[in-house]
Length: 402
Length: 195
Image 1 (cartoon, each protein chain N blue to C red):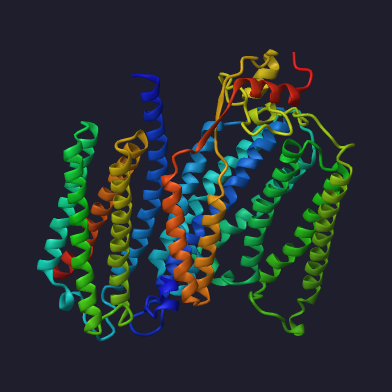
Image 2 (spheres, each protein chain N blue to C red; image 1 turned 180 degrees about the vertical axis):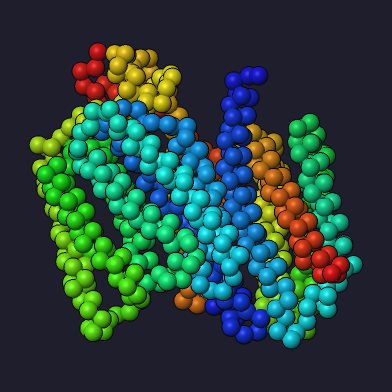
């Protein structure tokens, strides 16, 4: 609809001719709020894996974790107005969305407790991925409760579009999504590369990020409560806030140090990859991806063993069970360039529409449709890897297998 | 059931789940357009509102045509299951022709409105109307293109497992569009005339 407004002159969100800018606000946030849950749920998934692996204990309350995810997903569609409590919807409407926003904190809290209960009586090892989890669980919880605070419309009227809000959402994204991404990188890096990232540099990066983040955004919570508004480039000196801003600036510098350590970690680890080489299961993990070799064969699993519980690999290790040596033919999809071509054509369409390059938009669109039709008409899309070849690959990957 | 038949059944199931996922995203798209239309129904900016421009006899014709097209599509899938080639040919052709007739009426309705100066740029209401009804029409157009290709594939290669799968998915798509039209018919046209 915005594209139509911008290209052919419709009146969805204009301020005249029947346009309705509030409709835009509602639509963008009805999307925008589920979006932030799309951001955080994968991070939650990463942490569930990391916590159980590094506590050497299965995830506590798996069923309730799944139900919590479903509840979060459903509820995320019912809270969007909390992004614009102050735009005049009235007390009754605000009350509904305020209540729903508070309710959505509950399933997230369930997940937090389940992670903590997973750690309880576990044998915890504070490798880098687990450090990122510890950073997450503390900062995300604090950021989360500031969100519950702002869910109260009366309070939100004071802190809407202040630095308190800015601190909150950076807290959620950095403490939640970003730390989750860093944990995932540290955790699965050895699986797809065959060597570990340097642990010392990882620890340095983590602490720099954590301390830096707290110093950078903690003052913003205080400033927001004192009335500092967002999206300003300067604040009057007479307010006396300079000290807090300086602390925040120091925090940013420490985060930059953290980033420097991460880049150094990557470069150094890649340089020293022979020394840092590990086997397929460096963390003594619980799940099936650690059962396959590194580098990973294109078919991933040569045999599909029968699985009877969630931490199947852990069960295999406990029972001393070895993989069966009977290999079968494996059917794989054929490689194809269509994905790249279709993505390229779609990119050109989007680019051309944005910049009003109409000739390119039309041509790229036609090419796109033709490509899609061609993809649909392909007949020969599979190839088979014969069992003997599978056996050869497996023997090469595992070396001395019994 | 033979191993090959079971494999085909499982393949159809997997592909269907993917297609249903797409249909649900399409549902969300139409939901947004419906919500926008309902909010902007009265944003006529001094221009015409629905009651001034809707021609109900044409809308009724469109609806009957599209519903019959959906019926023909259902019969086509029956013909596919019973391997009745002649019935398949006839019903698929009917599906296409009725779908095309629907589009012809709709395009003529749009052209008339635009000719009178009541195009999508004329007011918020008209923007919402043209976009909602037009998006449905665009889906119908793409469906007809898809059907034509499936039809050509059928003529060239006969019934294959793949074509069976593709026709089944097309059936899902076509019925889905019919369902959306029911909502369009009700929310846009009927509610305007009744209230």
